[in-house]
Length: 73
Image 1 (cartoon, rainbow, N blue to C red):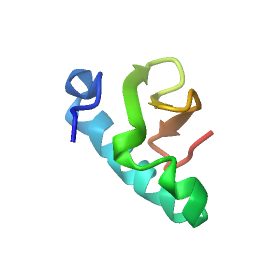
Image 2: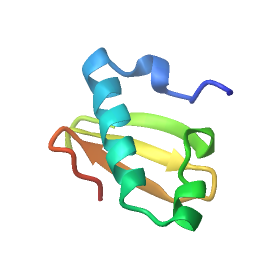
Image 3: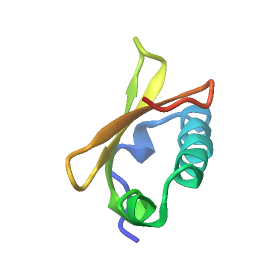
Image 4: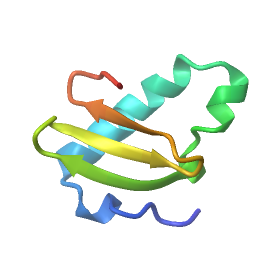
C-alpha cells in the first residue's frame, strides 16, 4: 500500500484517533460504501487544530472529520 500523504505529520495521538474512528466509521457502512472508504482509498490526512479532528480525504473527493470523541462528520 502507498503511504497516506500527511500521516507522517500526525502525532501518535492523532494517528490513534484516525485508526480508531476509521474502523468505527467503516463498521457502520454497507458493503458498497465500505469499499469506497478502505485505507487504500485515503489520499490525504490533515490535523485541524480548530476542530480538534483529523481531516480524512478520499480518492473520490469526499472528506470527513474524525475527532477524539470517536465521531465523524
